[in-house]
Structures are given as C-alpha cells and as structure tokens.
Image 1 (cartoon, rainbow, N blue to C red):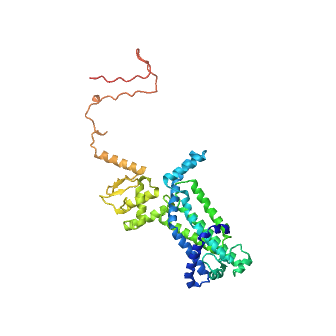
Image 2: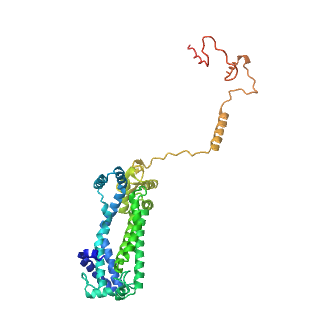
Image 3: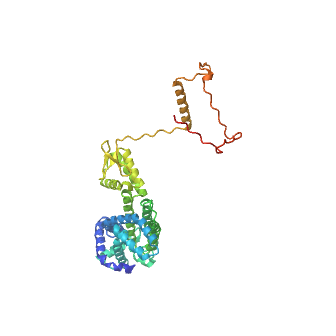
Length: 428
C-alpha cells in the first residue's frame, strides 16, 4: 500500500494543503489538537472532492442506463458469435460506437477519486511515522499525532501493535474497537447502496447477465472493504466511510427523483407524480416536465408504468403535451392516449351493456313473451268456439313419412334403389 501511495505523491501537496486550510477553520472552533478539527477536515475534503465529481457521476448514471438498454443486443451478439471471440469483440465495439456508450464510464467516479484516496493515505502514513509531508510542518505534525477520534489516533491501524499505538498515546483496545466499528459501518453502507440499486432502480423487464454481475458485486464489495479496512489508518477509514455515506445519499436522491425506466422506483415516482399533477392541475417543476416530455415522446414504446401514468392524467381530465406541460383537456384539446395516438377529450365513451345472469335472462324472456301474447289480436278460434267452416272444406293433413321403421318399398322399374331426390315443382 505504501508503494501504491508513493505513486500518487504528486498530488500529496494539494491534498495536504486542503486539509490544513480546513483544519485552520475547525481548529478555531474545536481546538487545533482535537480529533474533531482533524476529523472534520478529512470529511470536508471528501465533500469537496465529491462535489467536483458530480459531472462524472451524472455521466456514470447515463452510461449505466445505456448499458442496461444494450443488454438484449449484447446477448444476441454473444449467442450469434459464441464460437468466434474475435468477431464477438468487434461487433461489441461496433455496437458501443454506434450507440455512443462506454463501459468504462460507470467506473469514472471511483477512478477519479483514487489519486486523492492514496494521497490522503500517504499523508496519514507520514503522520504515523512522524515524517513531515506536503505542507504539514513539525507543529502541524505534532498536533495531528495528538488528535484522537473516540480514543483512536488518526494514524493508527487495526493491525498495529501495542508499542506503535502507545507511541501515539492510545491503547490497542480503543484502536481496534473504533476501527472495527468503522469497518462494519463502511461495509454495511456499501452493501446497502448496491442493494437499493439492484432492488429498486433496475429495469425488471430485462433479465441479462449484467444484472447477475451486479448482484455478485453487491456481496463482493463489502467483503473487499472489510479485508482492506484492517490495513487502513483511522483517518482513511473516516475518508472512506464519508465517501460511502455520500454515495448512498446521492444514490437515494437519484432513485427518488430520476429512476430508471421500467424499475420499481419509476412506478413509485410516477404514482407520486400523478397525485402531484392532478392536485395542482399542472407540472410545476422543471424536472417533472422533463420526465413527462420523455414519456410523451415514447408513444407506443411506453412501458406499463408510463401508460398507467398517461391514463391517470386522462381520467383526471388532463392532457400531457409534447413539451412536458400538462393542460386541462376540453372539447378542443387532443388528449394523448396510451398508444401515442390522439383522441377528443369530449368524445363520449361507449357504454357497455350490463351483463345479466341466466335466471334474469329467462325471467325477462318469459315476461316479454307474455306481454306479446296479451297485445296480439286473437285470430285463432278457441276450442269452445264453434267454427262455421265445414269439416270437409278443411285440407287434410299430409301423412307423415315413416323413416327408419317398417319394410322398405320396392323400387319401381326404371328407378334406382335407395333414397330418391325430391322432384322440383313444375314451373307454370
């Protein structure tokens, strides 16, 4: 670790200068030799670095989402050229170039802050060994060696022996308890950050190997922090714990306000947005208009959560516009439907007939039949009424043909056996 830290010695002077400037401010409040002054100086250094890295964090989010979108295409390429690794790599690079994505963009924040991390380690290691480094002179070195955080010196490590710890004015028990608690907190914050990313902010409609890799990293990273943490000084543990807490809060903010499309976080966000827009009748924030504009532009490509959002606005008498605004829909306004087409807001909805049970249909049919029988004029004579027509004048009922029973009549000469085709009536 000392060898790696020495490679970043070129940035040691700027890092030590920033720490000294913060120490000057906090020293006037808490005292120059206290752990609060030096500990808050390290925390402020982390916050300053992470603020400067916000543009890279935004780029990391965009790159991660772009990679999630490309996972189905990448899987097709892997299956198509599974026996030709060179062609597979060429097609992958071609896909990255066409879509403008870079797999390494998701690692930019970690890579960018690595020099500051190792430079801080180099500074704290110099404090532990009693060497002046950067802008830290003899007086600042003596003040830093006196600083303790909950009884543990800034330069002490979990694996330090009793002689080293006593030289810094502390006990082995205090150092190991403080460092163990900080290592556990550091690993837990890393695990929670990765877990909320996988459970809330991942598109659940796409199942790819990328998701399996992320799940594996969710368990690997905390173990790595625990293993390396026993070799870190207390000051470095303060730096890394502050970084993890900042990352966790930053991730929670992004998931809450700008979730990944198709994720559970998007479903919760659109539900909140529907309530907010319907209560005010418009989108009040710029971020809300940006989300609505992106949803309207998708048209038929919207996912189920986005279609539910558009339908919710339509039911509330609102219409989402292409510029991201929301207006009251009337007879002249066109409302965006879930498939991207437009429909008049005043067009009446077709009422579907209410489905009746079998007993209701039978009782209704019986009632209709009795009513029709009562209304119809009686033209047929009843059995008690004597008919004036003689019985001879009535046409005789045709005799019913017997089918199947009895003996079959013999076919006449010149006719075929079997069933005869009926003769067609002669034309007059």
